[in-house]
Amino acid sequence: TAPALQVQDLEILAPSGTKLVSGVSFQVFPGHLLGLLGETGAGKTLTARAVLGLLPKTLRASGKVSFDGHTWYSLGEPDQIAQHLGTSTGLMLQNPAAAFDPMQRIGRQLVESVVHKRLMTRQEGTHRARELCEYLGLSDTDELFQLYPHELSGGMAQRLALALTLMPRPRLLVVDEPTSALDANLRIEALKLLRSISEEAGMAALLVSHDLGLVSSFCDSVAIIYAGRFVEYGPMTTVIDRPAHPYTATLLSCELTLDRPSRSRLPVILGEPPSPGNWPRGCSFHPRCPDAQERCAIERPLFTNEPDGGYACHYPRREGRTCNI
Ligand code: SF4
Image (cartoon, rainbow, N blue to C red; front, top):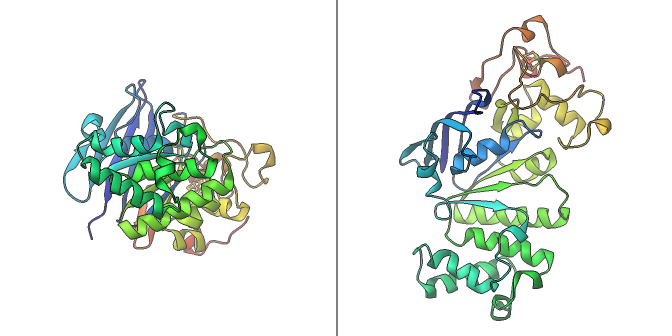
């Protein structure tokens, strides 16, 4: 099976020329979920937005992206990539209020989202909307479609926001997890639905998150991003059971949610993450790494691809180093 999404050598530069993201390559297969995990400012959201062609105009990207193994697009031409948004790619914002026009009835918004783009006839759109709502456990669609967004409960709004994103049958969905505290149960419920739809429809998804627990519960593979680079990437079970990178091992040992305030972090994660673009020389993690040696402050480790995943570390733990956390 061809990957639903392939990204090669993504680099994102600030207007000053500072590298915000670099050397990022990955792929996601149909029906699979890849978690992009990192602290605020590490570059995970920029990476996901570049894949959709949605970077702020002031930033410059390079590298290549391909959907469904067909055409390769240059990441430096975001308009070409963004033309897929709302058809074969989708972005799910987990704040459902942001998904709907408050002035229009729900049914109309669902149907118009595909009719307007000439993806379906009105009849097909109505059928698709009903089918999706029923799948998502929303009954009595006649009544539901007459409602305005402010008349929905939190759970209904969450499911309908998912339905709206899924209307055009996207092949790739990006879910950008908010850092603010939305109702945790609703988030989990939406991700469970996403997981089953993704498997059934063969849709690939990218879950951008700071929450290790959430990513490990729902994703098939994970990419851990630190200071604008992947530090570890591979199948979820490999990364969780045998982390190679000290950063991953530290996160796992602490079961951290990365955006937890530093004062409540366990002492093994020393210091603060570097600010975007202001990455330390050598290995960017060396000021905080419990395994750092002299070489780490001078020489940046290259990303090593192994059959069961890759990592960027001079002294990976998977090679039998003793875990000293
Ligand atoms: Fe730690 Fe050195 Fe590995 Fe960086 S290269 S993660 S500083 S051991």
